[in-house]
Length: 459
Ligand code: TYD
Ligand code: MG
Image (cartoon, rainbow, N blue to C red; front, side, top):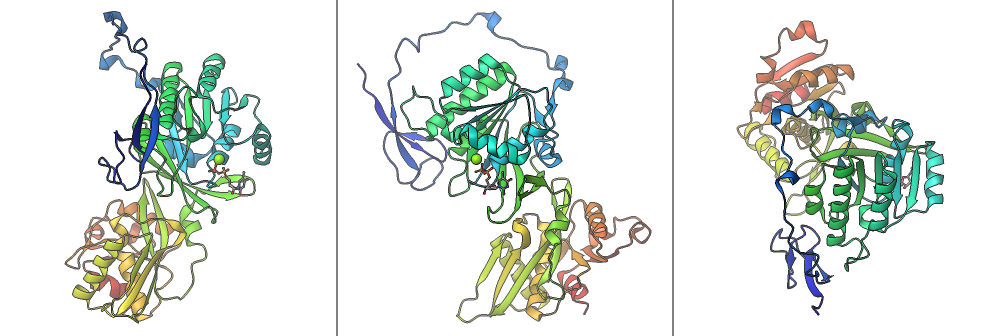
């Protein structure tokens, strides 16, 4: 009889090796190889299968009807938008996030708004039926068609799904599910992979929508992430601090829509509420007449979002000046500091400089450069920027301000939120037609960083 074998599997990328490696040869992550025991596969189960031509089904691409796609609306516009206009029937999606962020809450809450004719099965491997009921009544979820099951045995769940044929299945969470016939531990890479594979087959063969909840590890990735991301149709991440009430839902992968869209939520005593006006939320509590603050406008998908960039510049007490950036790329900040020094004559070499983006947002778009530059100079000179000023533009190494996309959308959003002066790249300014007639907000086109900073500081 064949004996079971030991393999080492990388918990990050699923790479398998016969021996343990400190650093995974495939993804380069350190200390991620975990041991798993594999039972031998019996020869009988691997016997050859012969296909006859009738097993293969092909169809001419012209005759595929794309209007067939059915989408379920969740009752949350923010969630529908991230899914690309509702959850697609027959799709398998993964919702990831740190513990306590609100994954179970969100998926239980959508049961309240989903079409009442849809049969929903909520499978929990983490909470008891009573706990789920208590949460559901707190959230006001009452649905005749919502069924709850507390089970972790994959085979039982699959059998139940096949037998009852629900329209939507929620699995909370994929890491707690396991196949008892498999020898590895629940939550291990091969178990998670196997469970996801089973749910994928169920979703596609029965044409039901399956939503998986996935935990993230300490680095912020879903355990066994790469392998899972390839299998599912959409991967959504719930971001934000469990301490603060704001949550951002972001699509990392979406086969049925764009991955640029974000959804903003707020957690309160009756669950998650959508925030339809994130700029207003991010700008609430902005200090008045304080130096080092400039409002930026970044595009998150198709939506412009205004947020506050804060900076603090203080004299260095050690030889090496300190730089720190939260919510903004550290290297990009160093680059902006260098441009300010070389091209505009603002010296930071004996200064510690800090950048913080309020509200936990990460500014990845180069359009935020100009606000960061203005905030830094404002902090250095200790001159407050007028509250009604907003700036956006990419900073180039020659000290030039480069054009950005969606300029008009950004200006309209700034105007809507009551800003009175908008500093934009010169090359965007010249493309605007009749800006004086179209907008009430004063628009200034800046060619160089020196000019933009002088405008903002009113010098
Ligand atoms: P939960 O959905 O259990 O998180 P996850 O499934 O991602 O681990 O969210 C739990 C947190 O949300 C918990 O800290 C309490 C908080 N919460 C509220 O503030 N209000 C509510 O109405 C609910 C249901 C939870
Ligand atoms: Mg949970």
